[in-house]
Image (cartoon, rainbow, N blue to C red; front, side, top):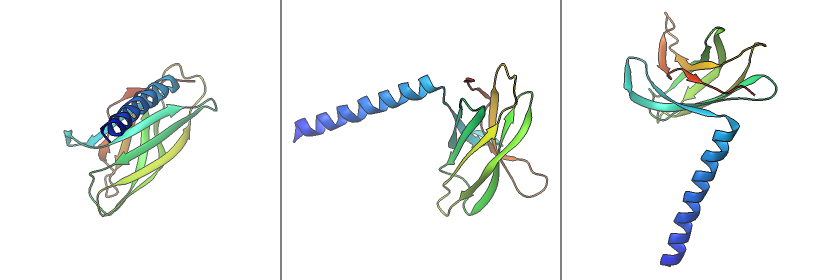
Amino acid sequence: MKRLLVCAIIAVLVLAVATTAIADKMGAIKADIYVTESPETIVGWAILNTNADGMLVVTVHVDDAEPDEVLPVYVKIEGVGLLMVGEITINKQGKGTCNGKVELPEGLESLIVRAQIKNLTPPPINKYKSDPVEVPLK
């Protein structure tokens, strides 16, 4: 029984390392999502990646946000501006995920991106966001 448990733990660790290595080779970048007014309060993460079709692929997930909200999700691309990715529906437990793609303009030499979740009440301020991260272009 102990051998089986040890083998299972080793298999999970190997899988975790392999998954991280594959994501790194593919160029996916993970950034923490935090409360805008309180950067030390991390509520989720964003995974940002590009594909060969010139799209920025975005997944934003929150684990500990204010419950029962539907909020717009944007990416702010340095030199380009704010582009809407989609909406995130946050459930009663404060969890939600948004998946989307945005078309990148041609000729970009670098891609610095910040994920943002806006507040719906005017003015539309950043409720949650990530720090800017550099995402490899493909």
